[in-house]
Length: 128
Image (tube, rainbow, N blue to C red; front, side, top):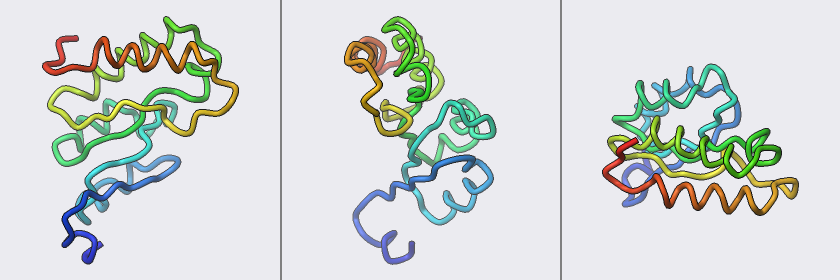
């Protein structure tokens, strides 16, 4: 990362699975954005990552692509977006997006609900 860190760019690190144990080293190495924020990964719970590393990192993701987006209602999606923004956005450093790729089983109405809820709740100052 030394060569990349000397450039005028941000470093986004992608890791699937339980990344919490690696986070201190990644922060020390100069990572700027962690992707994806996976709400189903118990050891890497979003609130815990924000509490422990939010002063040094931005987080991308957080909306569940395994259950909420494909099988939830638009209101379920809206509530998850609200919760994730409430947990992750105060102080900055949260990029709302699905926790991973959106597969064809996700109804368009839920994709729309995610973006509409981001529009509804995602402006600073966060007052949730």
